[in-house]
Length: 518
Image 1 (tube, rainbow, N blue to C red):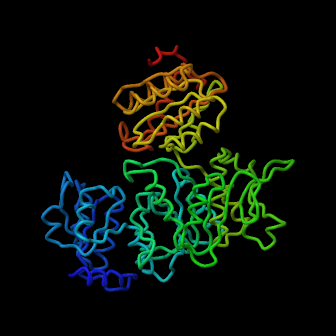
Image 2 (spheres, rainbow, N blue to C red):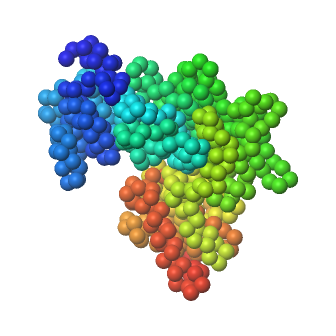
Image 3 (cartoon, helix red, strand yellow):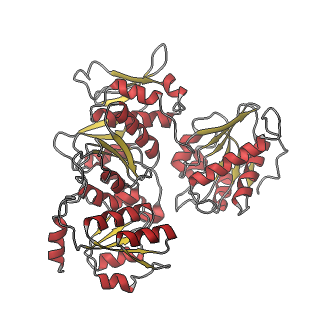
């Protein structure tokens, strides 16, 4: 097929009911996303070749059942012969494949279009009669909490709503649900956004979108902060009703100003201060602070709609400033799709923060132990640290090319002591020596995950005093010592419970501090 004929055919594939039969597709990766892509395309009648470094027995058998071909390429350093022989019409990459991956570079040099799973899902979103509207959520931090909150608000408002995308449920699985949905709240990572077009037949047209914040992250994947920021900004393209931005993060406002959106789309700000017209914010009162909407009401220059209170947020573990901001962002998205303020209040009242996100795992002898393993970059760790007056900080892992110097320089005023874990310990220890030489610092160098956390907890317990919080906020990825951030959080919680279990009243048996790291 010539490039012109290929482009013509692909441009017409904008419906489940289009003719996908015989389309030659190379699927890169066979995780949850890759399998959803292969399964969808096989159902559509395409010829599917999956290229992956490895596969488990269950997925291998499932691929055989759906009629997809599989070729294993352990190094993934060059296109295997089966891929060259296929001469694909399109390559669909799982989110882990960076722009610099050899197979992505091969596709680009061969003039092959590269899609992501989200573009494919948008093209085939009309499989069932009940076609969902989409709202999009991205940001360096807070994506999952905001996505879950928005979905809860949509459900409370009477919409059949699903949180999907980077949150764990592939969007392709969502669009193929036979009952259909009214609303998808789609969490998008920067990796997924990279593969989204901003124009043409595969471009999304969400009703509402938000970029919560932008800080350095995944620089080893994108190549630079500028490329990372530009990728995040794609979330706003073609938005129909509301581009929601963070008033306390100027970069997100600039993204909205630069976005090419549908006529009539509004810019809606959120922040922890009193809101102006077209904003969501917080207003103080004699009985406590109130979260309000001054955007989606006709009298917004003179009135505001009450959504919930900070007291109600505290009751469900959402009182920290960055979580209040997540609530405001979610409320703005929900109001953009006409969810009633009372439904927002009810959704918040019944909400439970996700595991490993500011999760209290124990409290004993005046000390609180908090698992924020999901703080996988410095921006998230800074927000976590700011929620507590006195902290013993468990920090470290893989920093993915991110500079930790500003975090250590700016976020140590509340830190009573620090326990450094992970592969990239040297730069942390050096940063503490430069910016906070008076803080007791301990280094854990065990490779075994069980010993890492048991040692870290023992050292933290030796420093902590009544009124302190021992906080796991690593500011780094987990893959050096754990399978993911959840495994890291579970190891921390298990070590805490083991440490506290020695006393009948549940109190920790404190040990003297070990020799600080040099």
